[in-house]
Image 1 (cartoon, rainbow, N blue to C red):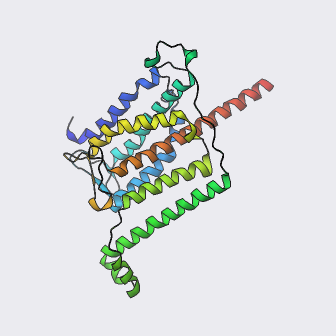
Image 2: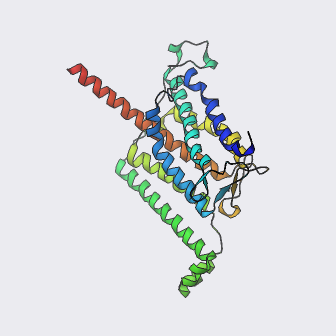
Image 3: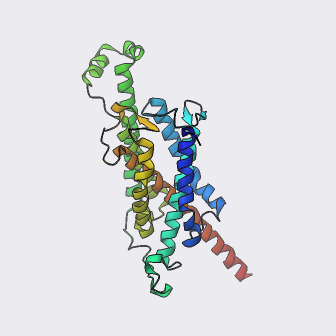
Length: 298
């Protein structure tokens, strides 16, 4: 296998490395393909769109040496579309495995000397009471403000670099643009916008209670740990698969050449995936319960 298939091979390795969770930890993800499709639909659409916008605006691009060069319009590689399927499935397997351990359905290897009845079930902590109207309004307003800020930054930066746009500016607007000397990186703004969007979906719409689940926090810790070798391989400066525009991110690479913003991007992606999964599984359980009650009533 040549270097062109390196990215796809890495995704296959991630799926293969988490496959044992389906059997050993009773994850029950691959056995529910329709629920997986429903859960991944919105996150796949949102983050592929955000990624496509980032590629279009030149925030990052992909090595022709380490990708297959199979692309959809505007230089968007198919590996990225596969990424937003493979990595979320790995997260779902981890989440369901953690939920099974916390619920006592599975005894983990490190507790094999304990019986199943010894495993407690502290899946959800005490709920945090929120005023739904106020929380939804605040989060929605924040999201709208950040979206407007992102748009204004893009317009200002285009005005500074595009001679056609600069020629069309009025004199006073041109002076304002000339005084905007600092090139504000767009990748951090994109990450903050995605995070605000995820919070708006949770507190203003779905209300799944994901942030009160121990399985969520355990999953995020495990995923961030494994993100270091996976993302680090993609962004390593010695032979990068993904290359970043130097002016469009903070420049901080705290762990193995991984840009700091990638961690925020990954957290937002996995949080939305797990929220969507909890939502569709909760709706599925309620539907099954209603059908059972109707059948028993008849």
